[in-house]
Image 1: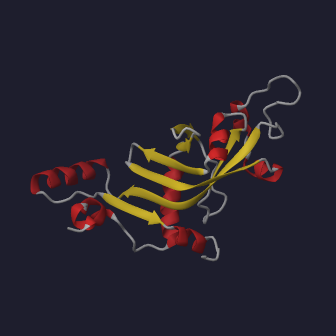
Image 2: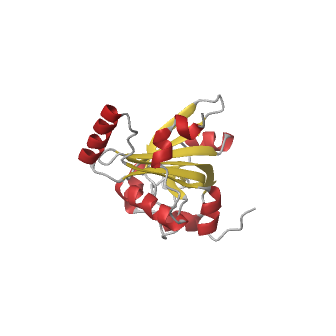
Length: 201
C-alpha cells in the first residue's frame, strides 16, 4: 500500500491548491496570535535543546524568515555556531493551529538590523549591569539577531471550531472515516524563493 493509503489523515488534510502568498498569509495569521515559539538547536554532543522565544513581527507581507533578538552570551549561540540547522515551532491551543519551520539560523550583530527589530520591551531581557557598557539597550554588545531562513515550512490551520472538530473526530471514530477538520499546508523551498523573488538554483 502507498503512504497516502496508510496515512489517510495527511492525504485528506493536505491542501496544495493555494498560491505561495496565500500560504504565507495563512502562516502570518497563526503567528499574529501565537507570540512565542520554541527554537530548537543541537549541541555539540548531539542533544536537542529548545527554548521559548518571541520573534519580531513580520515587516512585509512576503516575509517568511523569523527574526529574534537574543543575548549573545547565551548557550544557544554556541549551539548555532556548531550546527546552524534549527527548528522553530508554534502552537495555538485555542484553535489547534500549529506551524513548524525547518531552516538555517544566521547570527548577526549588524547595528542596522538590530535597530530595525528592536523594541523598548526587549531591554527587559538584558538588564543594565551597571558597568556603563552592558546597559540593556540596542547598543549593548550582548545584543544579537538570530535570523532563521526556512528551507521548508509546514503548518496546520483549523477549518472548524473546537466543537466542529470534536464532532468530526467523533463521527470518524464511529464510522471509520478519517477526521481532518483543518488543512495541512507546506511552503516549499522553491515557493519561498519564488515569493521572495530569488532565483531557484
